[in-house]
Length: 207
Image 1 (tube, helix red, strand yellow):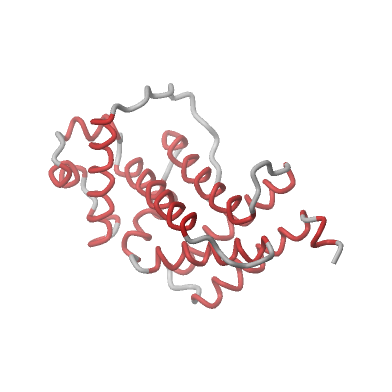
Image 2 (cartoon, helix red, strand yellow):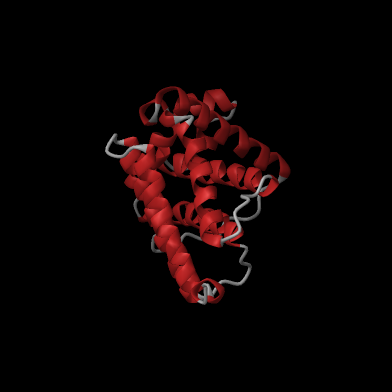
């Protein structure tokens, strides 16, 4: 996902267990409404009613629908990450594992195209006020890719490659959602971008 410049919004204190449970209800309601009707179906009043929180409380957690849907995407990616950790990709080469991982994530989004479209539209509409939430999406995507690569301490060069792969995955998702790319083309684009990993792998370059 594209990185955004950070804003000076002060860090929020850690959530209590009750607040965290309320936040999970809100994100679940957001995903459910988006899955049924896309971006336009996510109305803050309906989210508040569905998650059983006051409308004012919802706005304290998420100042706008865009904030909410970007946070929903981060939550969805976090859930995918958990699944991927339980069932990691089986390829031997890092590039192969990353391509498998991103295609599995893509297929998960493909199963709920209305939800995927709503989240991607929110990312597209996000301005500087949403930078912390967008950064969370980017960090989660980076973590998924680094796990698939088997890297705990990436170099600057490897992080640059990861960013290119993130941008490619995000762009492929947009073009697929808009009907301008087939699943086959998405796979080709992702696999092509993932070959950049070999350029940072001394073992691969020596083969």
